[in-house]
Length: 299
Length: 87
Picture 1 (cartoon, helix red, strand yellow):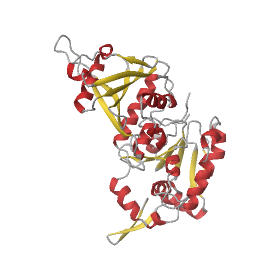
Picture 2 (tube, rainbow over the protein chains, first blue to last red; picture 1 turned 90 degrees about the vertical axis):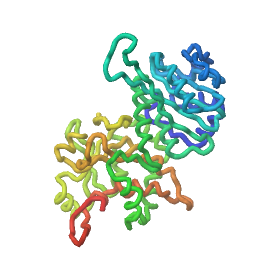
Picture 3 (cartoon, rainbow over the protein chains, first blue to last red; picture 1 turned 180 degrees about the horizontal axis):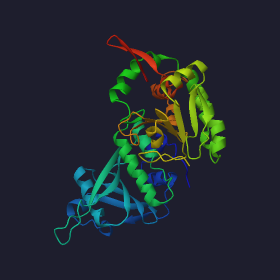
Picture 4 (tube, one colour; picture 1 turned 180 degrees about the vertical axis):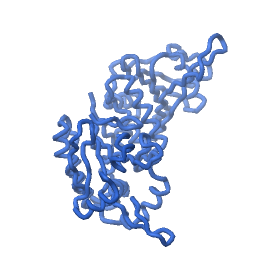
C-alpha cells in the first residue's frame, strides 16, 4: 500500500488525454483498475432523456471493494445542469463515487459525490430524501495550476480501507476550497498578513538560498532514502537536521504520547528570551500521515 | 496536540510528516481546526527565475517556520513599544 501521496508532476496531468491515460493515472495513485469496463447509462439508473443524450461513453475505471468507485464520463459538453443530472442518478446507489467528466480531455472535472442526510427522518411519500451534492475540481490538462496539482496528489490511495479513503478525498476537496497557491491557510493568519504584510517585511528579502539548498539536498530522493525507516532513524536523519537548519535546538520529548520534540533557540541568550515569553517555546509532533482537517495524535 | 495548546504547554505546535508542515497556535479561535500548512517538498521543487534559486513559494516556509519567527520582537505601534510574534 502507498504510504505517502504520489509526487505528481505536470507531465502526469498532461497524460490525461484519453480514457487509458485517466485509468493509468488512477492506477498510479494506487486504485484498483483491474475492473475497467464500459457501463450503460441504464445500469447506473440514468434514464432522463436530457441527461442520456449528451453521454457518449461511461466507463468504470476503478473499484475498491464496491465501496468506492471511479467512473469516467465522456460527454458531448460538460454543463452544470448535466453534472447535476448525472450526480442525481447516483442518489439511489449504495457506495461512494468519484466521477471524471470531460468532453474533450482538455478540461476534466473531478467530481466527488457527497451525500447529505435529511435533517429529520420521515415516512411515506413526503419524507425527505438523501441528497447528493457534487464537489467539483476542474483541471486544465495542458496548463494545470499548482493548486490543482497539489489537490490531485491528495487523491492518492493511502488509507487502510475504501471508507477511510473516501473521507480523505472529502477532506481534500474541503481543503481545496480554502487553499492558496503556495499554502493552505486554515484561518490561522489573516489573508492580508500572508499576501501583503509578510512580503513587505525586510526578512522577506533576506537571502534564503543557503537554507533552500540545504533542505533540497536533504529532500533529494527522500522517498527512497527515508521510506520504511523507523521513527528514530527518521528523526536522526531528517527532522533533526531540518530543525538545525531552521535555527532550533530540538530536544527529544520524553513523555509517552507527548510531543516528539521540544524546540528551543540554539543561542543561550535567546533561550532566556524564550523563557521570558513561553514556558516551552515550541513543540513538534511527528505523525506519519496527515490527512484530516485536524492532525491526528502522534503514535 | 490540542491539549498541549490548551494546557499552555506551548504557544505554537508544529505537526509534520516530513512533507506537510502544519502550524497550530494557542491563540487561534479553534485550536484544532485553524492551522497553516505548507507542502515542503512542493516548495523545494519550485525554482525562481534564476538557475538554482528558490522561488517565492519557499519564502513562506522560511519566514514562518524558522526559529527567529517564534522569538518575540519589539514592535512600535502608535508610538508604544510592545512585544509580538511574527512581527
